[in-house]
Image 1: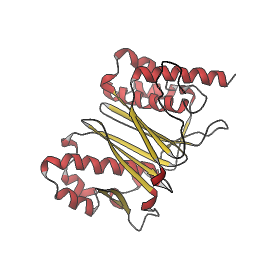
Image 2: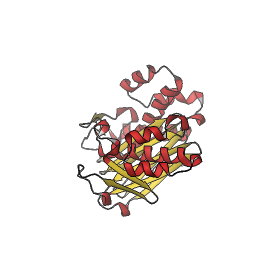
Image 3: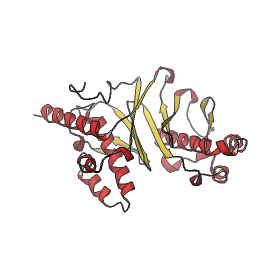
Length: 265
């Protein structure tokens, strides 16, 4: 619960809900970047300082600040105190401690936008992309996508092709991230359908299509967001998705930091 006058960034986190929050970088005031960076730990701030381009540095800072603030609203510790490990294929995970619930998260950032997905227990993946037609092509899809996806794209009118290309690309990225497989999993190892949203796996993958929930969102007119959740009863999962702004994020992070310090005394 937020303090009076502050927005409720997250309702109570549960295994029956996935909370998705995004932040548009163009709306972040110049004066907010240093306070946002203060939510990161020392290693992340060092890494952020090494980005050559400001837009890359800002995307990295915003994504990790958003993640840490969301985590701190769900467990009593300051944002900069969270520690992470990596799975077998490099997927970040919260280091479990006695006072930390089994939180599962994923983050993504692209030019102009960052997003975080947070839930309890179940595997989640998220991907965001700026829709820039020159970055994806039918020729690229023909090399890496599954045959049914390529057939769908070949039948798509030229004016609608970029939207469908980015839809399939972001969904594939979100699914791979939810599985925690990284680049070890070829993009054609599973097939996506867009209408209705569905996933089909090759025989080489021990996955059940009926244990997957997929969603597509449009955080801005020029960005697309894909969410993938592996859950034994996907029809019961609620998707709670909304944008946030930097000032509210910083206010709530300060509140979470205060609660964390009080809880550790």
